Image 1 (tube, rainbow, N blue to C red):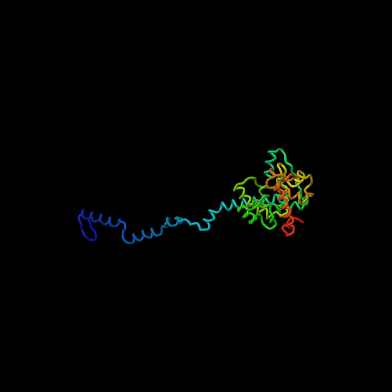
Image 2 (cartoon, helix red, strand yellow):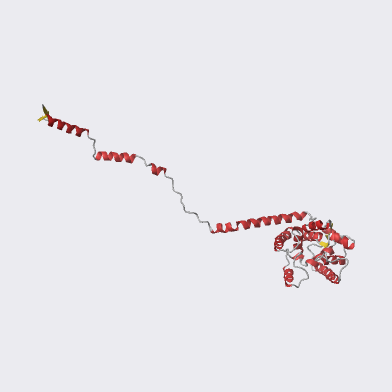
Length: 291
């Protein structure tokens, strides 16, 4: 058998071999530059999902607190406690500005101990002016000139040359009305906080009125009205200068002294108090409370 290909005569085996080579060349896929560029274009057109879906990374660097924030962090609770105590002091002072403290913590304890007390509240205009002046002359001669604390009296008390303690009438009112008896740093601290507030909110006349109505003059006898009746059988408005001066001598030690039966020291002290009452009236140191 003879096969003719492109004008040549070939034998059958050679013809078949040549045909197979031609067929293989025609069916083989192109692998040239055109194929590579097509693949690159397909790859380039495909969008990258990693860049579009990636979230921005959060900064791991911690913000350093400022200097003032550190200071406030340390002072926050002390400031809050101070503010709460200040609010309590204001409310306490306002409460007794218009309401008469008929009973004090000490009076309550004495009621439980004794069973009953001798006490009657009177207004300032129901108290003899000489009694008010005598109390100030005996306990706090500079009452009208200070704001709760008498530095001169405190210095004299610390040096041991004072006849009385360094506490002013304002401090004694705070102790008697709001606090408790006895000596402790806690009580002194609370007293020091409350006294300026009472001085700021109350008038001097109101402070002295409360003082004369809650002071102890004998065991179970509280207030100048009950004391005047107890010792002299008169009302507080009718006290004489001598009687008023004697009443003031028992204030430092009401359970150990008597205004109706004074000792020699009390008589001398009463005479000094009477002179002091006249003096503060003359020099104006009684103008803040007495007519």
